[in-house]
Amino acid sequence: MTAHHSHLPPFAPTKFITDGGLETTLIFHDGIDIPYFASFDLLQTQDGYNRVANYYARYLEIALNAKVGFVLESPTWRANGDWGLRMGYSAVELADMNHKSVRMMADLRDRYQTAETPCLISGCIGPRGDGYSPTDRMTTQQARDYHAVQVRTFAGTPIDMVSAITMNYPEEAIGIALACKDADLPCVISITVETDGQLPSGDGIGDVIEMVDAQTGAYPVYYMINCAHPDHFRDKLDGNNAWKNRICGVRANASRQSHAELDACEHLDDGNPDELGRLYCDLAELLPNLAVIGGCCGTDHRHVHAMAKHALPRLVAAG
Image 1 (cartoon, rainbow, N blue to C red):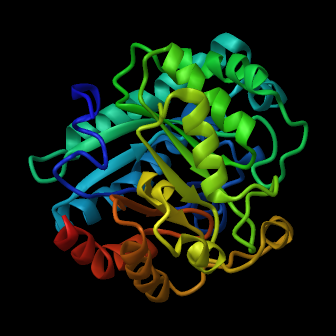
Image 2 (cartoon, rainbow, N blue to C red; image 1 turned 180 degrees about the vertical axis):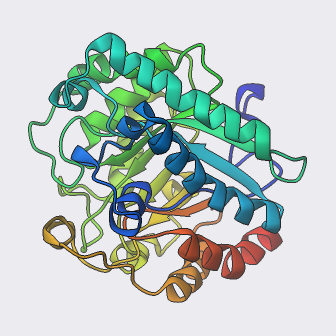
């Protein structure tokens, strides 16, 4: 650990919660049309800005009540070049939206942060392609060059780290980690898996963590798993593999459906919030350094409240 990372999970003196499924909440609960799952686009209007800010506020209240930290993940998962171009954004306009998203996170931090609830700002980066399918795979260098553009927009902003969310093949994850290393920004790599516990590329969780660490000098501060139900990957966490110690965050789906089924689903599958919260207790037993818990597709404040109720006490007791 370096002083550069002493305030970040898993080194920080508190555990953290984060939000749930931003886009699925806005689309299915709030009835807002979000092209390409690009929630950052809502920040163009005052009404959209307020809706996104209110979304985060619900989760910050949970963190305040639980007296734990909170990770503010910026709504910039789709704010990269290819997706921005599809939506008509120029490079300058896209950079402005990344900056505006971080400013929102900073405003929320300043409003809600307390000594017992420190707030971290994470600049969120999503995949260049489909989050569910590793199509048009890049080489490591191509991914490094491509994502460096968005990484550089975060440099000089108040972010504490960059988080690459829903990585589905190793080269893109490695490239992003190297781009963050080039910019001297701490990073988190979050991978997604199919119902068999393997990445959509066919690689295993441990294999990818070991590959990224080997090719980046173990640069990521920690790893996460997101956009999969705990039943899809829980059995992959058995045993005493050293790579398990690098997984410090989980943002699970509420649904047990596959990525293909979720993609085709016209109605939200929000599962059982209380059951999901209890399943995080199992994950706390399997992951010795679990320090960040939140949700992904189909989850909302009810699911994260259940996680805080059932799993946080176990995490805090474990230190």
